[in-house]
Length: 111
Length: 114
Image (tube, rainbow over all chains, first blue to last red; front, side, top):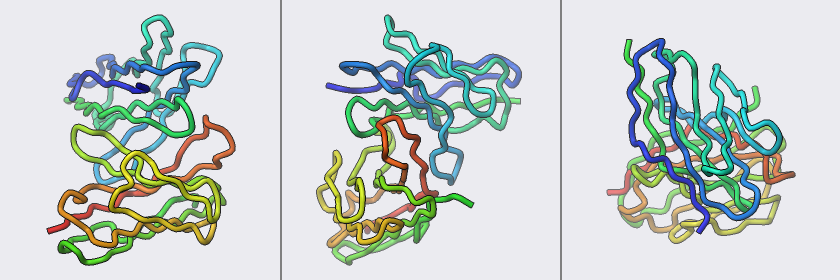
């Protein structure tokens, strides 16, 4: 079955430290991968996506993600976390004609 | 400002009382979709529409109806709501021209069915 997994319900990191939010996928064919962020009481906002080409994708707010085909992963990263990055992050994949979302990872950045 | 709007933002109702959640986008997008968000389950697609008068079921369509009479509007209808439909609902839209399009989400509607 086509799926995407976010193995961590919550990630805690101190402000200024690097952060990683993990995502793995299982799809047949070429995956199209997305990261969305949800701030409190807001809808989801697009961060970045991988379609093809360079495995390192840069997105909004200083985030980037690395596509690793051999490990079927698409981890979200940021070199230096901000308190304002605290939010719920969703990884998603398009195997056919619709987005399949992971269960989400809550990122908490402490001052 | 390009946006997806939903109304109401919050709604508390009782079992069996029909309700409609409206969704409107001002980006001339062809593709629109409804999701529900539940803890531990992420977002699951309810219905989607590729264009006017074209709708199709998503992963969890039971208990819901939609219509797409105009390009900009995509209302979600609960004919007889039940407590298991208590959830956070999101409408989304995209150009729909390719599978890789970015979706734009509304602010969400928190529904409680008593």
